[in-house]
Image 1 (cartoon, one colour):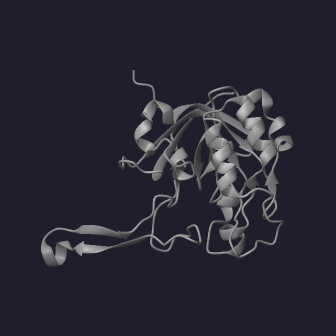
Image 2 (cartoon, rainbow, N blue to C red):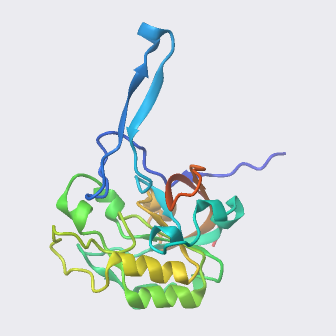
Length: 236
């Protein structure tokens, strides 16, 4: 008998009206042909950057000459891991080592770790979502590096804080997002940003373990790619 698995999709749907990183162009998709007029329907994507929606970042994003998508097999982008609840977090608040220490017994070497800050619940064209998501601080980076995890995911637009001209209500990040990315990459940690449905994984619990599969578009030489992310829960 085939075993049936519960699979939870942790990906946001792409659409022309979706929120996106403020300094990058929006997603655009149009009809190239329609079945009514041409006999077949064909869509054309006229604007899509590699950090759109739910996506994975590779070291080439901030480290010149380093690894791109080409250097990773699907085995590198899948594995056991944990979703942890970091709510409540306020606008622009830093995620620290102290926030993560309480989950120490659940985070193991080689794990994929996804952090639920609650920001996916307010996804939209608002100042809080576009500029003020909770972000990873330096102490958290050092903690995760010591734990030797292999992938870090978050439900905000980036693991690092917004560093542009429009300021969030909360304090500005102590360290630029680019440096936070680089520190994590140098520790061998890949990054998945703007993930969805972590609340459906946790189901009001503080921690949930399971198997992750991250499937980026197979684009040659890129520093990042939109991806589908799937989670298969297991019992703690």
